[in-house]
Length: 124
Image 1 (tube, rainbow, N blue to C red):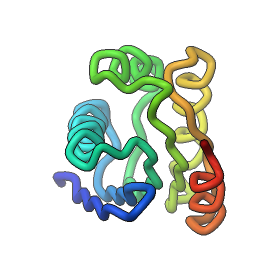
Image 2 (image 1 turned 90 degrees about the horizontal axis):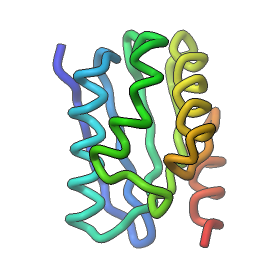
Image 3 (image 1 turned 180 degrees about the vertical axis):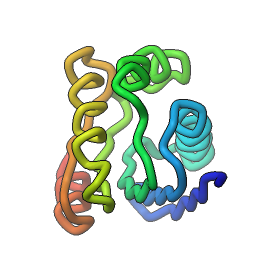
């Protein structure tokens, strides 16, 4: 199954939704699309929603800092992220912690879109 990615630009942020299988190749493709959308709209605040049917492995999670660096994702990006699949939330949180511990990106995980949006729009 390939990924379904929808990007909706708003005045102060991009709302990105992704659905499909979670693996390293799909993650790389997805983050390439996010970077391209941010560049296209010159907006680096991203409200992300995901519903993945599977997760990356623990080893693949540790590859995310290198992936982000390769794609040019730095702390100028702000991510408010919601994982809508309870079965994959723990892995999503692990990936987030790996990225945060490496000071690669700036973001926060949420359980609902409204909280994520409020936090994202409050960031400078």
